[in-house]
Amino acid sequence: MIYHVLTPVALSRRGFRLRRPRRNDVLAVVIVLVLNSGTYLVPGVLPWGPWRYLLESVTIASMLWRETYPVMTALVTGALTLVITATVHPAQPFPYAVLVVEYTIGSVLRGRTRIIMIAIYMVGNIVAEYLHRQMNNPEDFLVTFTLSMTSLFLGVLMQSERDSLSVRADRDLRAERARIARDMHDVVGHAVALMVVQAEAGPLLVRSKPERAEAAFEAISAAGRDAMAQLRGLLGTLHKDEGGGRQPLPTLSDLDDLVHRVRRAGLQVRMEQTGSASSLSPGAETAAYRVVQEALTNTLKHARASRAEVRLSWSPSALEITVADNGRGVADGAADAGHGLSGLRERLAPVGGALSWTSPPDTGGFALMAVIPSGQ
Image (cartoon, rainbow, N blue to C red; front, side):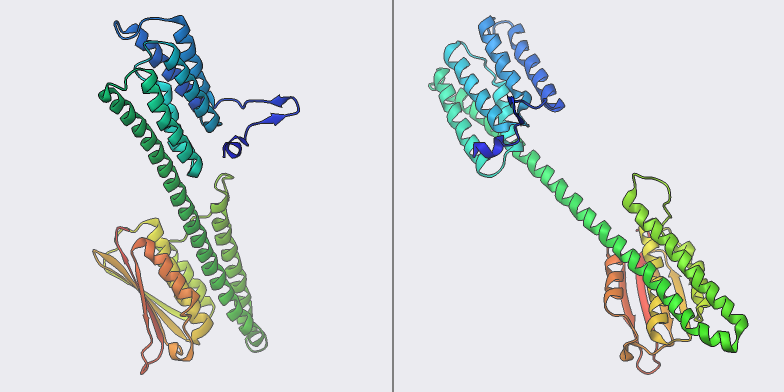
């Protein structure tokens, strides 16, 4: 067990070589040395003894590697403390070094290693109290035991907090990766849908209406450039430390450009906005933009629609988005009820939004509705 903990010890051809102490460990040693020395300055607490002070200083100095080699430090500190307690009387009334090491056992060690070291130190406390000739004074023993358990508990609590922060950071990282993946799906899917529609119409326009063929090719080029710009912005979020080259994420102010590109692809789009606009967070605005983008992309790819309508209805408490078309409807498989809509639900969830859709069997078509609370 101890071997596994000591494996990080730096070894070379010349033999054992200690690593450089960490800054936090050096600071802890300095603080404990000051506290320990201060005990001798308080009248009537502890008589001065150079031999005692030297042993105590060596014991405290061993904590320079308390986080690098925690087991070795704990054993050395505990052993030297017992030596001081057995040979020097009266002993130091407050075991500074032992309390710091017990905190380290709780905060650094794990599993069976931590359990074994806790057991060793609990036995060491009993032995130290016996050597300190305090076993007949249960109050002193209770105080020492309580201090030891408190140090161990604080150490375990600190380790749990670090683990919790690590889990949250990992969860946030996965969520960010999922968000980027959804953004890339939306950007690429929208651009490809526009380019496919224009490319399929291109050969017909060249033969029948050459003057419109040029506009189709320009629309393909514009869709490609826009997709490349947005992809550069998304990839820039993965290289935040490199700086530059990052494009801002799209918001509601970019909807006009989106609708213009879709119109150039041949779909008649009518956009309407009612109510007084409320403030939305950047994340909520991007989610709203993606809802409209995904809905229009699905219309182009699946619906065989000739027109679509985008309505933004503002109220004091929410923004309601409706994108409706006159296409085939969901009955004929026109709607992308799989990855696209499930991805929109996942995108809306962090901002408190909700998603629904309908396809009236009598009139046909497909309508997508999203509600995003304002102030999100």
